[in-house]
Amino acid sequence: MIIGDRLRALREQKNLSQGQIEKRSGLLRCYISRVEHGHTVPSIETLEKMCRALEIPLQTFL
Image (cartoon, rainbow, N blue to C red; front, top):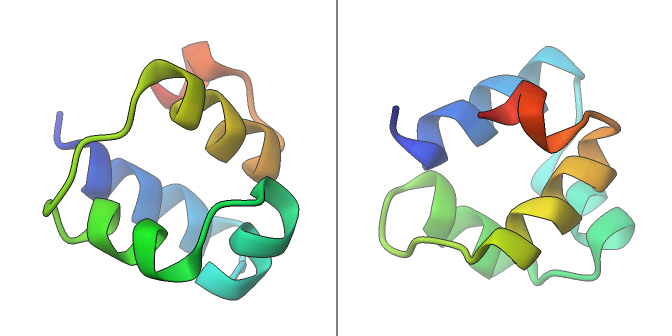
């Protein structure tokens, strides 16, 4: 599984923009973009923030 592809698919499934995830998670939109494009790999703590912003449990993401 590629984390960025999974993040983008879940975000689009919920009709959320990167900006909305930024507001919900406190992570910068440019960082979210870098994750989605595979330029960086988030830590588990960061993944948890993203999952909270997507309103899904971490287990669902993985």
